[in-house]
Image 1: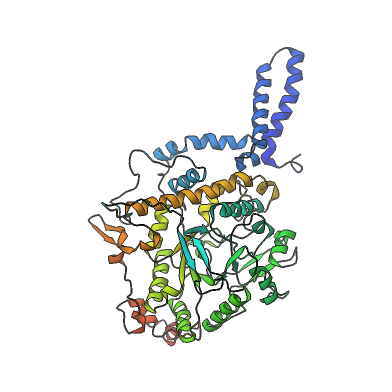
Image 2 (image 1 turned 90 degrees about the vertical axis):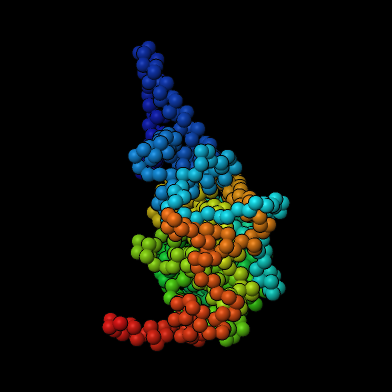
Length: 545
């Protein structure tokens, strides 16, 4: 029976068997009806769990899921006295998850009795308000990307970050894209390319192209112009994003075992079903900064003039500087750049990659923004940012640091019902989100979860509008580093403007900046190569420094 019926249904099956056995015995002996009542109640509960469509966990774990919900009902009290606070982030705090759940369900998201945060603890941040607040009527904040393209795109200020079909279930992709269509925001495909489940709902797509060139590859794994043009010219595809690296595992390729390459995944990625699929650590279509920019121009032409950019997690600063120097040397540039923070994301990776590799979002975003400002390129290139963004304040502080818009992956997973079980890489996701098991993913109700995705976006952007209005601002473009304040000690606070070194326009074109990173690495970066400068090579030759 265990082989025929998953063990998670065992409680439900035993309840049915218990009812069928106890009922005739009770009738025969004229006693023990209380046992029948218990089994009948459990059977009814399990049947309700299987048939209802709002809770995927209950559909996958009939009867047993109710134990979780029961324990969860007094979980805050247990944690408050014995385990952890609601604000402890591991990796997302209960408070962070709860606000997503409540906004996704379109329920009350208010809190009584004041903040639970330690406002006098170093690192606490807040937004300054105005004595003359404004009412913002148009809350559909938009960012124009690729103004000089034939097909520019006006993106929402808050979108779905890259998550591939293959990492997420079919129903999760359907729900995300349907929610994006209802809310008018975009859905990044992830490097797994455009699947039938991205196409079906009709929501806006940003097609991410990684080193495996899925959806646009030749049989040997190289880039195919013909396959690219087929997908890139789809009306649903609004922008093209070349993935150079990602915050979850920068500099790390991957192998999708053949056992996981189903017919549907093979169809989306343009690979043979049942065979191992390799994503190399680096691209084969280009190997220098100039070749990267030429590749971007090539993609823009093949797509019919849609905005094309790239996503990266910042590592060696001279490599990023080399790309910008290539822009200055050639006059070519991307339409946008998405900065992925080293905080990680939905992609499973070795512990060292998650914890100790890649620059966190704050420093990475400031570096990218400063470089573009210092070279007078900022107004030509839009900046998106992703890295542990779940609330309106997360968006506000990120925009204040220099981003034009934000993306979120795990936030939207919570909206789908993710309970942070940390089983994304096992295929045993209890909420049917990060799995390819059709018995699990199939229990995620698309109609219900797409509404939650839509409501999470709408209510979060509404909260952002309320924050802006309270600060006396009328749109997101007015947010700057002067609006966010950080406690640097128990007796001292600073605005971002005072805390971080922001370059003046054109500063990198006119000599030293008094910024140690720029003054050390900008002069020695070479726009023709990603190779380390001579200074770095010499340091690598000896420990005597």
